[in-house]
Length: 293
Image (cartoon, rainbow, N blue to C red; front, side):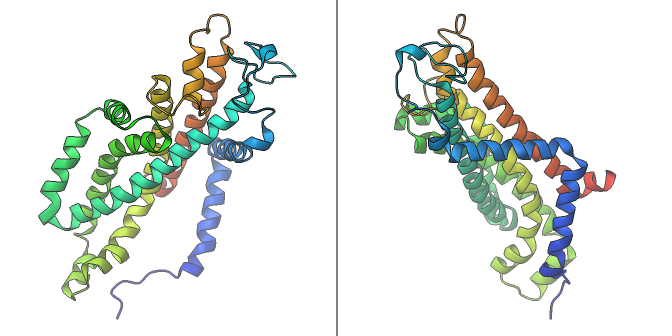
């Protein structure tokens, strides 16, 4: 006998789809952000076809050339095409943001559910999380990259580790609230196994806040990756990224500002779009805000 009645997923799916369409229709800024992100994703996927030349190819005629019909974004100090490098840079930033968001949310969800529900492990887990949060994320990332060497995997792991404690604390707070609900206590009373309680009753309450948190983690990861690359502790110089492009162009900024401004503005637009999308999802998924609106 089921202790709680839940709506049929099939019957609920159309209403959720209509609610999502209404959200985009009543929030033009969120729709614009979604379109910008879609364009960036498509540009990153089809970078080999949209780019005009090899991103590492040096051309004397393009050396610090301003944006023109021949070179849409101009050329850098080595004569490399900035349009092509910006496309490939989108691959790095979006990949880092996506991987860090998925991995940190997944690991943080597992640890947070264990910490919040199994109180015997709570003190130990949270002291470890507090220790990680006491270290500035950028310094921890620089230290890990310095020890392990610069690579895409190292940068991703270095950015992911400081994000996990934030996710753990969010999930733990949700679990501590939900585990006191009557339907959870009833499930415990009838002897429902702990994994089933976590899967059926705790996890659904964690998903909406984590979707919103994932957008903020992705935006933070993109910014951190660019900062690490700008400081020389990110992806290797041979991999085009927006941070590397800005780092290489800062020396000639007074005479060729577009080398820094183009990747910088692209990064700012991407992060702003992710944050606006996250704010819109929060307004939709947070019951208190949705009710007030």
